[in-house]
Length: 189
Image 1 (cartoon, rainbow, N blue to C red):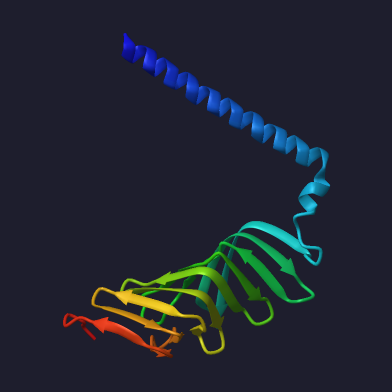
Image 2 (cartoon, helix red, strand yellow):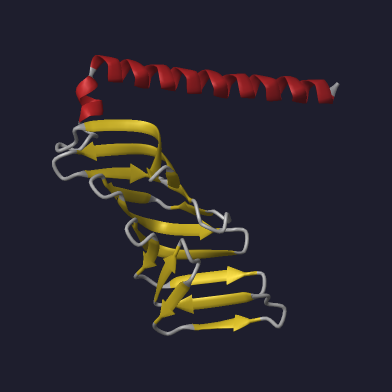
């Protein structure tokens, strides 16, 4: 008997929470439809377009270079930039081991496809992963550049440095400044 009362109370509690959430969403939606200026106030003044849930792919000579998804994007045509919220980028590498990157925010320079991401930048391939605070992508050189401290690790190594340059075509990575780390005997080159 106690079990059925417990289940009944639990179901009533869940129903109450769902009802309260539905009412909250309804009131918020009504407020926005009656006061659209509240929504417009959140968009930067210089924005030409505000998008949500975007997906973009960049190609050069018919070859995909990267694919991007982001929660939102603000396009500012005069400045030729698109400001991104929570970007996720997949860089297509020559060796087929694509690099997956996430960050808190980012910027794409629309004229050149140059990209900058920042805030808890994390990237990984099947062989390694790294973290840093800022990272730039140069499409002309097909390079990722971290000018803030970077920590990289794989199955048989860890490494820290003040900066990093990674060529996505050759997979050659250069580290500079206070480079330190450990390499296991099991590292296979």
